Length: 199
Image (tube, rainbow, N blue to C red; front, side, top):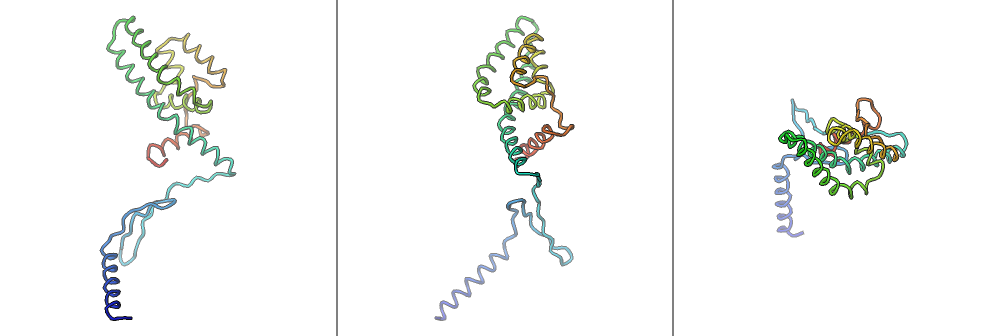
């Protein structure tokens, strides 16, 4: 090999070595976790790694059910948040209106707006997604859909809609209670991961 090529190779190797030494390790993600860097304490190198939560399911069938639940929650969760915002707006505006007739007009106009906006969306949801939405509305508003209908439209209307829901094996009076375990606890875990940006 010619001396000038050898010299060029040596210079390139030295430059690469200095570049590597000058760079500090940056946090980066890998499958299953995140490398956070390292520290040297009393001559020992301590590597810091954050590991993502690991969920263990017995048969693959359970994993598929969980993945389906994740998809369904991700689809309906934004609508539950919107329901909370509508309820807050409705309550704020109703506090300003003193006349019962004006209150009824305002509630009717809000109902019409909601029906026009959300009927096409709700028609495309599956029964399972509808049942999850009922639970999430209770989670977000601290009131079941039945209670919301009863408070804003009256007992008769709430009972009518609940009877229709029961035809489709749903219950507008169903409460969301993740402390009891089961599907509600899994939904709460999924929402926590969604809010943290991990799903």
